[in-house]
Each structure stands twice: as structure tokens, then as C-alpha cells.
Image 1: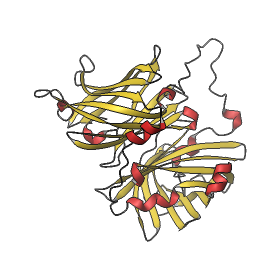
Image 2: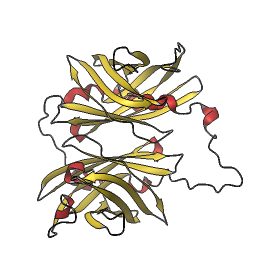
Image 3: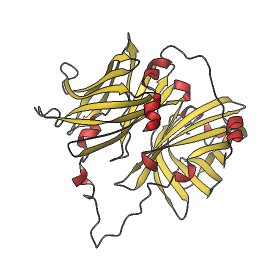
Image 4: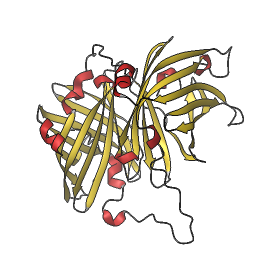
Length: 378
């Protein structure tokens, strides 16, 4: 949540360089198993299952959220909803928050990803004001439903520790607190408290949700074409930037859902080929000030969110670029959406190690829309 600013396919296959460095194939699934002498690490991949669903949210925000450790403290109260969607059967989830109070309407999102290697979660917050994810807060649950998550970031010009805590978890309620520390964790100042109560009946859901149909700004509908279910055919260059000419092929499906009434979208893809299983997601958030989209990607193998690729659509063609580490050096990554029709689209990814003078194509996805009736049958 941080400051109020950071509250927190042709589809989703903006795969980024990270995918090429992850172990693939069924033979890799047990490579991290501990030896008999090592203690078994706790499996926390379902720690957030308690929160899947719709909640009434009562939020208290401190006046010191904007200016930590300074001035008198007052609290403002907000009321609204939180909706939590399961991803990867619980190994990730997406939260959408909408509340109203003295400061107006707050709209946030949190993408939570489980890292099966570290057995920790990373929590990535964003708000609809800028569509940019903040520094990930990392941690885990211990002691029967008590979760602590930390990061170190610059807040209003000062470096501080940030702590998120989940507690008082029951089947119908839970509590979240955020606090800052500017003395290395010796003392903490709480600035954000959310108390959630589960919504269980359909009538209550209808009364509780806060649909927002505000007029979209230029650029916001750009990814509306991708909403729905798709069949995807993927071609992946096996070893990019190595002179490789060997391509792997995959078949699978993708599903894309709205976030913030279309000012963002969340996509999930599963595909198989050559003994490999791809399980991935992409979050796309619109920045209304820059009139650009920020695209981030993660796979279930690592549970780590990629650097954001930024860009925009022009004349039905979207181009997005970021810088990422690959094989020990930084490269440019370019993603392009093209050939967009109501029932099909085309996605390509390429790498450049010479500052964009030349590009090597390494990922091609051709997608075909699945009709509503076919999607229901599946």
C-alpha cells in the first residue's frame, strides 16, 4: 500500500528473458528435493487460500502515511470491497481493492506470487493512478496464520523498512497492517489497517461490489481485444543469443480477465510441448499520465515478477520494451502485438544485445479465440 499512490493473449505471453533461464520439463520437477539429512522446508503455496473470494473492507489510513514520523497523527476511514482471484491453483493470487472515504475513491491491486525455491511470497502492489508496481514485499506465514512480509524502499525521499502483517485469520475475517521503520526495525509506525469480513451471499455481493464505469481515457481500451479465452500455439527459440536455430513448439490455452474495469488485465497461460509444461501469467496496467501500459510477467517455476515493459499501441500495433539481465549481461527485450482481429492475434518477442541495432526473434504466439460455448464446455 505504501503511500496512497502505491495502494496496493496475444495475450499474456510477454514471456521475457526469465523464462529461458528456468528449468523446464518433467525431469526437473524434483531437482530441488532435500537430502535425508536436510529438514523439509515448509510448503506455503496455499497460505493465501483463506483470502480467495469477495470481502467487505474497512480501512483506516494514518495521516502519517504521506509523511512518516512527522507531525500530529489523525486517521481517516474508508469502506469498500476486496476481491481476490486464485491463480495457479493458489500458488499466486490477484487482489482488487476499491474503497471510498474522505480522500475520495481508492483503487488498488496486489499480485502475490509464491516462490517454490525460497518457500516465500512476494507481494507486488499497484494503484490505478499510475499502473506501476512497487518494490515487492517478501515473507511468509508462520505460527498458525500469522504472516510477516518486508521490503526496503525509498518513501518520500527517505529509505525505510516496510512491514506487512496478516493476523486474526478466520474463515470469515482477517486483519492487515502496514508499518514503516526508519531506524532499522527497532521501532515501527503503523499507517494502514484493513479489517475484512467475508461476503457469502449473492445478494450481499450485489450490494457490496463497487462497479466503476467511468469514461476511459485514450489508450485504456487497448487490451480489451485480449479479454476472454484463447487457444495458443507457441514457438520458442531454445537457446536465444547463442546462434541456436532450434525451435520448440507448444499448444495450450490462455484466459484474460479485466482489472479496474479494463484499465488493466490479468492473463494466465498453460501450454505443453517437447516434454515441457509452461504455466505463466501477465499483468498489464495502464498509466493514465504517461498514456502507456506497463506489462509484467511471471512463471509458476520461480514466482518472481519480471521488470515492467512499457509502451503503447499505434494503428493497431502494440510495441513494448524493457531492459533485463540475460546470461550475465543486460539486454533489450521487445514485445509486439499485431494482426489483431476479433478472433485472432499475433505476438512476438525479440532480444537485442547491441542497443536495438539488431534483434533476434525468440518467441512467437499465434492465438485463436475460443467461443463462449466452447469455453464453457471446457
